[in-house]
Image 1: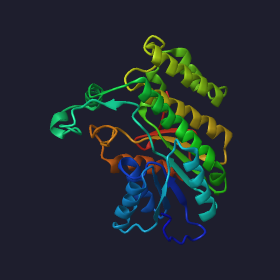
Image 2 (image 1 turned 180 degrees about the vertical axis):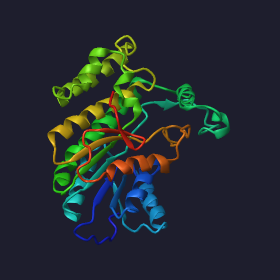
Image 3 (image 1 turned 60 degrees about the vertical axis):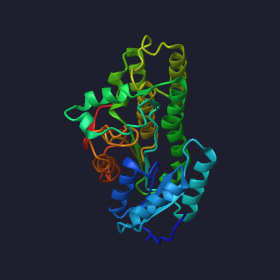
Image 4 (image 1 turned 90 degrees about the vertical axis):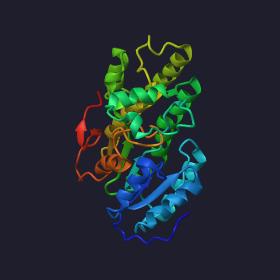
Length: 308
C-alpha cells in the first residue's frame, strides 16, 4: 500500500522497520507528529496496513505502509526501489525490527505478564522473571543474529545511497543496554569490539561465527560471552560496533544507537517498566537531534552514554 501523499521538496522522509506495534509504532506516530513523512514497514501486510489506518484515525495522514522482511534480500530491494522512485532520497532510517533470540516457555494460559505478578519488582528482578519464562536454543540464537545484526545491516547497505542523497541523512539503530560491553567477561573480546580504529565488518562476522560455535558447543560461559539472553546481547553489541564503524566511514551522515529502555512490549511479554510511548520518545529524540549533533554515539535516557 503506497497511499497518496504529496510532499513539499523540504519534507523529511523516514523509514521505520518493525513499525506495526510496540516501540516501532510509537516511533512512527511521534515522527509523523513532527511533520516527517513516515514509511511504516512490517513483515505482515495485513498488520502493517492496520497500523497505518490506526495512526490515520489519530489524524496523522503523512504515513504510508510498505512491506519489509529484513532477512529477505528481495523484500529489502523492493523497499529501496520504492523509496528511490517515490522520494529519491531518505532522511531518517530507524532500524527497530528485532527478535528476542529466545523462545517463551510461559504457560499460554497466563500469556503476558500481569502487573500484579511484577508489582514491587525493580528492573533486574523483572529481567530475572523474564529469563525464567524463556529459554535459548541454538536455533533461536542463530535466528536472533540473522535478524538483529545481519538483517539490520542489509537494510542499511541497501538504503545507504538514498540516505546519502539527503542533505542530513540519519540512521538510528535501536539498541539496548544489553549490548554494552561491560556484559562481556572476556577482556580480549571486549577490547576488540571497542577498538573501532581497527575493527572491520569481516572481523565482526568472524566473531559472530565464533559465538555461534561456542553456543552450539555449550562453551558460552567459559569463553566469556554474555550470559542470559546471550544471542540478543551479542547481536546488539555487534550492531553497536557496526554503527561506530559506519559513522567513521560516513561522516556526511548522522549514525547513532538508541536504548529505548525496558519497555512493555510483546518481546518482553509486557514485563518492562516503560510504556511504548516512553520508549519510542527516546528513539525519536535521537532521530531528531539538531543538525551537527553527535554521530557514532550511544544514547540512553535522552543523553549520550557509553558503549562499554
